[in-house]
Image (cartoon, rainbow, N blue to C red):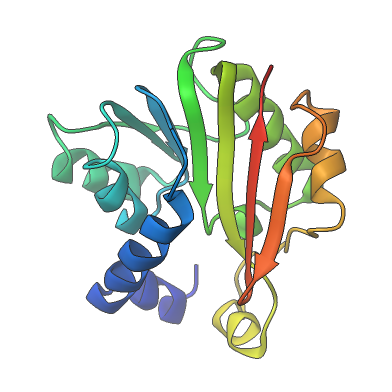
Length: 186
């Protein structure tokens, strides 16, 4: 991430906005008893999830961020330095897998699909994969100057999710510049 992006994502204002939006995004969803968060970054989403689910594990690709989160959530969540495209967890381990505002940082559609396949592999039958990501706007584009920005196409996302094994007809919605999706594993 560029400096402007890092400052925004580590700010108290961003954490407050995320807390409000994430509570809305998770309303009505049963994440179960053992949740994996992929790509927590600075941890604004982790701060919401840790008080909402019985057991939380987070996999963060950036080693410094993973270390910072591990110290902040010691005894409350398990933080693992790991890549969402090659997760170090057993098959069918988690009741749900979630990712928030991070998919556009995965550097290619192929790697995004590898992340989807890993989410499918580690979620239990009956579990869900839920996430939110940003859609393009002028502010979003400016914020990502010099950053990785591979925007997820909401029109192709359902087929991409079912191609890795999730049930047909995953829920995909776009509203207010945000893509929200939920896919289930039979």
